[in-house]
Image (tube, rainbow, N blue to C red; front, side, top):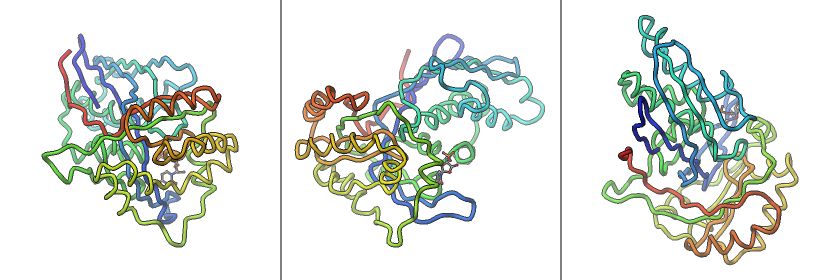
Length: 309
Ligand code: C5P
């Protein structure tokens, strides 16, 4: 995430993510599913502005009238949860005014709400001067939602457990993870994550994640394209049959794309491209089909932690 100071507060660009690989290892006694997933941040961002005050209230306004601005929004949930960390003396006075400008579609499997929540934890921790240790911030992120922790560690990671156990892919500390280019299709219909998991039968023999991680680290889109896998995709396509059209459109673009996949629990799909030009060409061809909003995106782009105003 990119954080920059603004008058009286901070502004954060919170990225979306794609799942390049997602396998379900089993159903857990708590009702969640044990996952193994390879996630990368992309250059599609929500913008959040935070102003701290001593009102003791969290006030959220959002430019998308379809989203809740109360406790049902993960931004508010994250702010309220972080406020408790300040202890009984300080927390009643901690307040914030938050403005959320959405670009990441909801119910798309792109992690927009989770990324907004991670941005909220980082921004308010700074503005409220809490200095929460990184390990504790990660714990809080895991309590707010399965994907929130990833966004504290983006741009690329293998996530396990519910998704909250994050292993960043910086095996070469001196070099950034490789970049990939993709065409992103966001259908006008969304899919609810709990419905997808509820319709899933975990596989007897899960697909191992190793080859996908190796292919990702190789930087070779053709090799990565052969390892793309998402166990949730057939379930989402059963729940929302309109998604079959998106998949067909991406199949029709093969071999000019190196592979295609649904992200997370859907409904967004991406096609992996050799380079930015190939992604743009695919976007032009998909643009006329009426299957959704089409964008060209870059994956796993390293972002500076902060940049000047
Ligand atoms: O953790 P989060 O609130 O994002 O999860 C939304 C829903 O997705 C959960 O209530 C659960 O039904 C399902 N889920 C799951 N296993 C996971 C992650 C999510 O079953 N690992």
